[in-house]
Amino acid sequence: MASFVSWNCRGIKNKFSDLKDIINLYQPSVIALQETYLKPGDTLPLKNFNILLKNGTGDRATGGVALLTSTSFPTSPITLNTPLQAIAVQIHTNSLITVCSLYLPPNAPVDQITLNNLVSQLPTPFIILGDMNGHSPLWGNPDTNTRGLQVEKILIDHNLCLLNNDEYTYFHEPTRTFHSVDLAICTPSVLPYFSLQVDNDLHNSDHFPLIISDNRRQNLSIQSASRYNFKLGNWCKFSSLANINKDIVSNNSIDAAVKNVTEVLIAAADRSIPKNSNTFKKQRKVWWNANCREAHKKQRKAWALFRRNPTTVNLIRYKQTKANSRRIQRRSKRESWERYISSISSKISSKKLWERVKKTSGIFKSSNIRMLYNNGIPVTSLQDIANCIASELSRTSNSSNYSVPFFNFKISAEKKNLNFHSSPYAPYNTDFSFSELKR
Image (cartoon, rainbow, N blue to C red):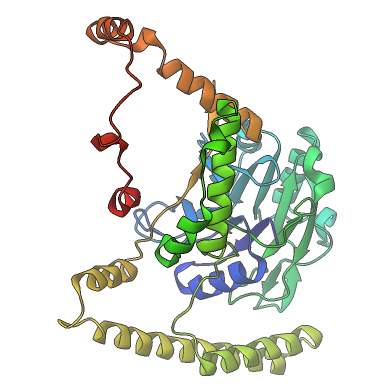
């Protein structure tokens, strides 16, 4: 649904459940997080996403930014030479774009030259997502502060576009006021394709998530490549359908013969071997139950009431339902964990034992799609990718790469006449066994 999500989570460890809710709701390709509150060495294991972190320094967990990229799209991290809390990645969704997550603390002075240097390092087109703590009427604030003037200067000097409208992105609880400090800034070339909306739920933070949608995306959900599930295949049916005879290959060119054989095999596989689902894989919360659902519903209802009528009584009611929801979720997590640990006993197999150990450790299989580069330039179109791979294969298989002994042996072997009349009973002419096919 959404292409990008930006959210100041104010501590990701205790907002991990809310992060999963946001992912399941909007199905983004990239999530930019600010104020993750992770210490050096901390990680953020999340299935079906690759994580790029820039954690705070020192023993006290402060600030920090993160980029979560879906494993369904080719990505490549960008190295930034900046003291700012900023990270960037290139991702190819509809087209190649650079996404940067940026957090500018409110009380830390930021030099304008440092901001200009950051923008100049981002490959175009790009989009900057983050909490910049700037106030300006340009994005819905009644006042202007120094940081807001700096952001305005960045927009003017680099000819950038602001995606924000007048929607508020931050709730200041002590004063019960709303402000706009979270911004989405992009280059002009991608402005016509993007639209921004602000989530109406804080998700237990004090910042609303920004949802950036790309109207070029035809599919509303992220879909990975479907694969055959060979364990459930009907191999008898496959053998009867995969009828390859001499007529398919004998009277055709090599390219036509390969195409015909491939079509026969694929048609037989489609009818006899089921495929895995390629729909968006939701983030699971195994501890979530009816009590959690009901408490969360009451919290959302109390928040909606406060938004309509922001009185002290309604704020207190919202804070009470929020605290009750957190208490119920903690209890449910603890009970679920106890049941899970109790299931690990001497009766289970070693395979299942290590599977559960890996799950508890947050170890997942990574299926990251890497970006292909040719002479330092990213290759994105299918035809260019095919040509690039073919060119590399041609280069590596060129005789100039052979060693001298092998090259001499190759020349002498190629001078010998080949005998195409071999015995049908020779080992290499016998039918493949099922165990050989499985290899």
